[in-house]
Image (tube, rainbow, N blue to C red):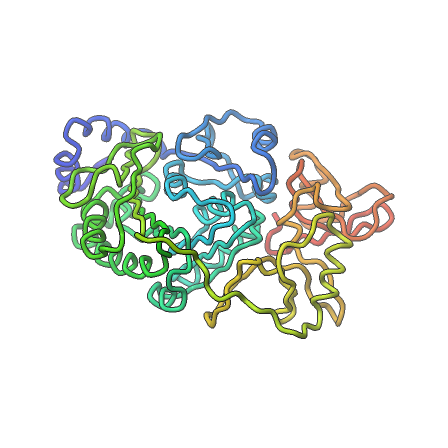
Length: 448
């Protein structure tokens, strides 16, 4: 790979003896390929058995693996079922460093397309709240699709300026991930346009924008909470220097400690930023490149925004709960609320807000001519064991391929009514069983 002259000189000066390993890693034929299995849909053991190919663990996440082949996700039933998420291996490191805990309120401030959001969701295990914000509205659509496919039931999605979000949700989160837009030097192998567009002017522009986003991010962290700043670039101006600026301008925060992480290397020395609070992942470490910096907000407190209060009268909430209990074995987790022509199950930790929400909780049912029919989203948020009626298929079953193409498929004639279709324990969709045939309800926009 031919680097821009100035970039190469900067990296030689920065890396010193590590330059040769860095250059050799970039000379590899292909970027690092990886996937992260999704414990919301099935167990890690079953997921690996279903994948049926050689994968090797990556240190960046307990659910992360390096791929030995370039597995195509688009037509893969396991991808449709949310069994895994294709993700560059080192991109998994940020959520591992943030370490979300079950029941916490977590903000992913620059969330699209959803790799880190769905990883946070896996850590939360359906409890607490995941608030995903994506400033670019068009990028929010694939984010919502990935949340649905991966069975996330406790997420909210907005498309807002970070300053607006901070104004409405001050000190509302236990943990905040700020994976800021950057110059993308770590994506040179994966995205050649990042290499072609490299310039110092762009680095300086990105660094200034990152400081603006960090300023807003800090306001959303509760006392005692934590903020993880990350980029996928190598430029010190966007990494250690921004981290040092943050500590210097926010005395209510202190540096965290990432020295125990089992990957990468310490941050490079910069005045007023301890190297133990940062972590750098370089291509020779098994990923494309990432920078991490952890901060703790001083003090102690709880993330306690005003709770959402459902309307006293809701035309379809009771009917939706009855439908839920007819179709599923588990208890509904949240509040049934009718929004337009959809009844949604909002997470218990849902806060009251005047902000415009693109997505909240999970769609349970659609209102169809004054009656309710189940929504795809609620089936996607379940495992087979949660469903009263299931057609279980293997990944290579012709019936599964037919289902994903939108066709009716045969089923046991003892089944009747709304029935899940699962790959192993991972539900991919549903249909209506009638006399030995499952009439397809897989959404047209998702079909192969």
